[in-house]
Length: 163
View 1 (tube, helix red, strand yellow):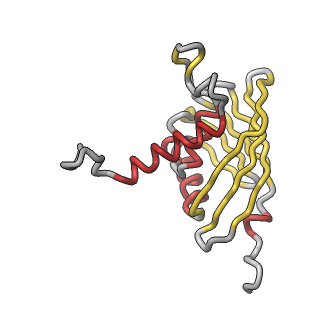
View 2: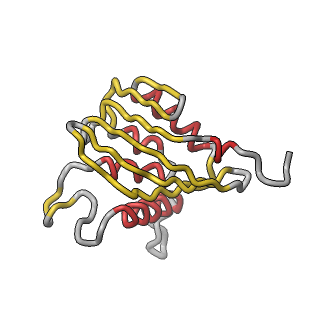
């Protein structure tokens, strides 16, 4: 539905779409846009799915998971799509912004492995960059396992000058 000026009446979803497009643009060379291979649509990759986190959309990320998915995120664990979505929504809910830069990607056996830099802004404005290794199995959704190896200490550190 649109307003009289042909702008979407739901600006958050329009904003989300713009942020998702920007996140995907940062992850792919112009010659190989996400979800396409020489003009043909293909199944989304781990990169495509990871981009949903940059728009803080746990539900969209969870749509690409098997019902019995297992998530390991640092020391946290969650099993099942609904529990993973709840856990991710809670984690993302503590952030004002997230911007991922995929610095490397490999297909290893039945998995896609991503090397990711996560620029995080907490709700209080504290900023931190986390480096992560992400393993998603199988290499294409629906994913049965998502493992995120990262050190959360920089994100949890107190903002300088406050106690």
